[in-house]
Length: 206
Image (cartoon, rainbow, N blue to C red; front, side):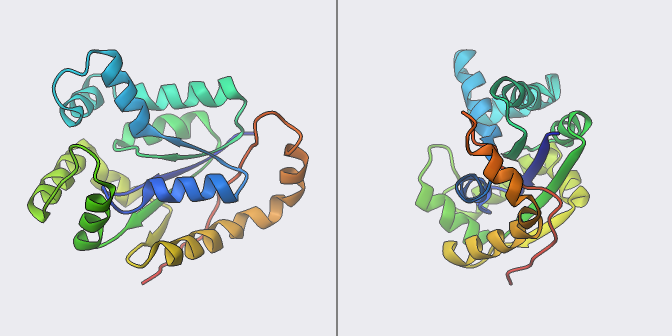
């Protein structure tokens, strides 16, 4: 039975870092929704900005990315997945409708911490000051992030170093993973290494 851990939060809170860490240290496979959006945007000619394309896509076809994520999970035989980058309640609802065991984790951090992370990432189109970050936050709230925040099952406040964040994230994950050691060992012989993260408890780092 497939399990899905969905990690949400505003830009710069550490969603991708969390997904990559869990991908490397648990039995879960990490899939990044924004990579799917960027791929579809490129497939359709890369017209306009990625942000405007994402906003319009979530209106015209709100389950587009979630459907592709679920398709890849089934195609690759993934039974445990960590999904990052969802912006819309419709995306989360699509996964929850298809996957019986899901958990929605919210990551938070203060704006200055988030901006510094984005500046260090240096990705084209990222905010370069607090004003641009606030505008991006509002765009994500308009897509439905505010509703997602209110629906979350668990919370990690990420205002410390990467090392500290990873320690709390691992402790958070172990609440569930300690009960599936046998499953992890059995899965090692399979061509796709399955990873399992779900049913986690809230940990606040600050």
